[in-house]
Image 1 (cartoon, rainbow over the protein chains, first blue to last red):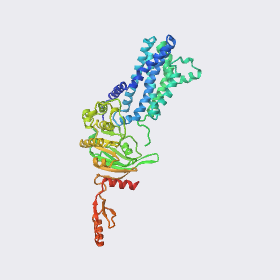
Image 2: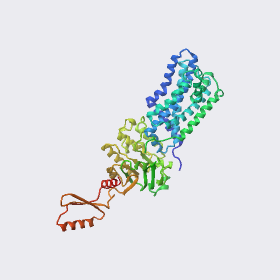
Image 3: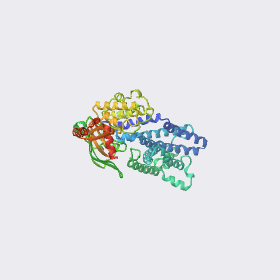
Image 4: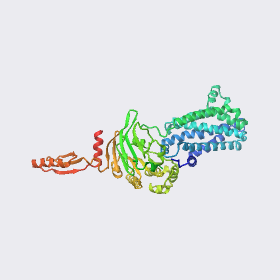
Length: 253
Length: 286
């Protein structure tokens, strides 16, 4: 039997639907657009005139935005979709699983790109930080971060038993990382033990790569280890995401 | 196409189906067959194994043993999804989409969908087509479930407890949709714990209790071989006797009564209702 509905058509329609729902959901749209802007405004005011600190927080918040647009929102969304039974319902249709997940991930990628653009624009126009010096390298790191955190977000969704506990799980992973990864301050000033832990985590390497590309104009070669570590985390995430995927909320039969 | 491949094969064939969750046996050797175009009711109390049975047929759960064919195929076959419509027991939709957008999105998943407007009319959703899903009433949300199960123009539709928790008006409306499905020639497998629902909708009924089918047949003939003979004895108490041969029993009873010089007050012979059969069977097991 031939597949009458093309795969790309399914994935594209799902992506379009996710975009439409994103803009209709005020909470999602708020966190997606205004949160990075608000954080930049606050830290911009705190660090006003201190160019060195501003040069830290712009790539830092760019990295954090990539993580929150993919990792955080996918972990929340999938948990809610599973609990509402929407995933189970979709499972009963002919739409291929891979096309559905591609549409869902595409939405997260679009949000990450949108937030990145907002952060770069605001950094230049409001805080007076220069345009990124190596666009290509920045795009590559952003893409690596998106892929890595998309898989990790899907993987984490499996571990979350229900939507009520989702904030606890997500924040337990997200908050410590943004605090030690050098999002808000130069990580080199942190104690050694904190720096060692941070070196094992993906966000640190995303921020390092973005910072190198945006502020110092360093190419990919300078931060190839960071790219490798992002890749390894992405691979681990992909394995966990595919192996543990569950369509149904866990309930007693 | 699939219809050509499987025409003539029953819509559903189940033989010796068993399924356990750990040490709890949910299904213990279930057999039944559903013909094309039939509305088949799986009737039983809560916890009887109805949902487990339907979810095995829908491909959501693995069976432990037994033969199961749905439209001639194994229920795990993804190709079946284009030919089967599923109304799950409780299942949400996207809250921020309108009814029409949701149905249109689902339509695009299927190779040969029905017209969206036609499905909205069939499911009785004309009045709220442009309302967002999160603003729907319980009855309207259930009708949206029906619409999404119908829009792919499936041959076979599973309805798991389609009216549980409904007020009487919403129930009647749902029944009308199910009758409309039958009129379209669809095969319907319906689970319910409401006797009147099975009686009103199903061509054939199977009574499931503790994972076993206790009886099966058209609702008005189920248990038809067992007649209830009732009368009032001389001291005024109501007596009843069940028999497969009412003629012989009546002969004995009347002969004895005449010999004693009594009359059998309120003598009646009735075929049991579905309710009688259901209660008798399920209570005997419980």
